[in-house]
Length: 407
Image 1 (cartoon, rainbow, N blue to C red):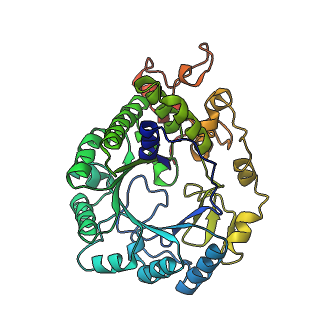
Image 2 (cartoon, one colour):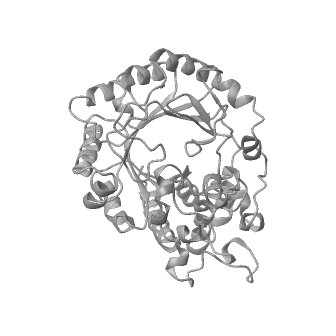
């Protein structure tokens, strides 16, 4: 996750760089259930409104939770599917809170209503993220539920009324990019505290729909808009949070934005960005799926490291000779292609390995989702620049650069 608002505050206040702090253990994104009342076109879990056998029982969840606490995992993000469809979700969440975890709920928001909002409030979630993928028409078509937009906004409103910190999440595609300014206006009008923009990652139904990934220029326009909003809010002293996910090139693009708009302040920002270091899959980010399989992050569901029914998470994560994990933990990572020549590699860390693997079957190839031009990353001018604004838009569309058809 790239915390734009945090870096805008650093840029504005010129916060000195402190000593690097590494978390004692990874954040765990835990897909407790695969069932979902929606069938979103970009769903990385390919969820549906049906029962998936083999999921962890309540007692098995508690056993894993005890191990995670002993291993010093700081954060649990309870996800799905739709986690609110799990009958024991409030018992699980309350137990996690009682054990001292930071506990987030990742929901589509449509099931947050007057019947369960008090239970949600009583748990004391640190954060509730609600996904909305455009204005009414786009969201309801993309999430394949008529009335989904209104239901999700209602869920957000109920969270606000019950003093639950909640935020809006949005996956950017070429089909819904035009709705981004209006969604940011909704955030401002309704005093929603956090906005998370997710770049499309090629996994699950997201892989099938990669032809609809945002053009590079569209991505840059979206980031410019977020940067300006976050900067204005930082200057005004607002507590809003703008964050992005699944494209660590955002850090480099922010540095370029700062060098253009606040050149005297940019050098210190660069130090902070290098200290951040970009992609953290397999190191500070982890995933447990609904069956108990452990993955380097939520987009590697086809790559299992072990199962918590058979071995503790701590043992799986700590003791591995898995090729992908060893490569992810190498510092610096051995990434090829444009990444190997990028002078900002310390900021990005090679970006998202899932997209690279989907592109050509190579864990360590360049990420085709990098929207920075060759000149922007310090490459020779005579190299092919796949993100150049001079190319026809059909070539700038990432999916057109993928040799294999969507599956």
